[in-house]
Amino acid sequence: MMNKLITLILSKILAPFVNIGPSQGWLVPIPHNLRPDEVQSEELEKLRLRYRIPNSVFTELFLSSSAIIRRVQENVYFDAKKQMPKASEKELLEAVFRSRVCLPHPYSSKITKEEIHKVMKNINSLEDLKEYFVEMDKKEFPFPEKPFGIGKKLDKKITEILKG
Image 1 (cartoon, helix red, strand yellow):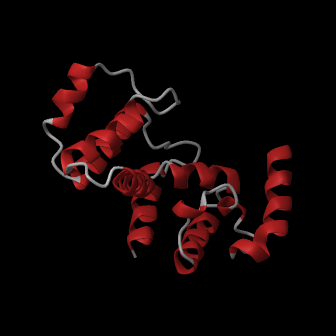
Image 2 (spheres, helix red, strand yellow):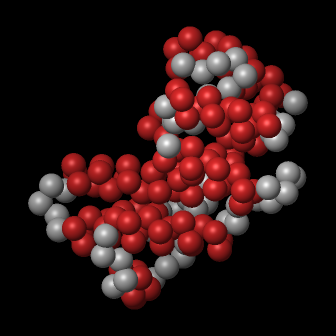
């Protein structure tokens, strides 16, 4: 209840500054580099309303979607490229990989150097890396089917809208 109130208050206060309508409170906690554009956010809002998904739940669904997993890896890749301009493509890909699996955060996995090298043998492009993490997340953190029973359908629709 308190989260809903905070989200509502923040969405009303921040709406003029971040192009968020009063009913799009789900966008407030989303980092700017992951936000959909205005047209996409309107489509996503229609999707949220169609299924009557609360803002806080929709934020989670959005952030755990395949499209956002891919976008995060792209962002990390381009940041690594700026920080390591002389690195080879393989070194950049491994840096992105390590940033995800070697840091102590909820989405990291326990992985040995040997396992890293084994996985990296099959990763030859940013696309390979993004798909690896999408598949890994599907196994480790499946897209929630409950409470709405439409998790995979929502993931597909969110991905379609963001590719738009």
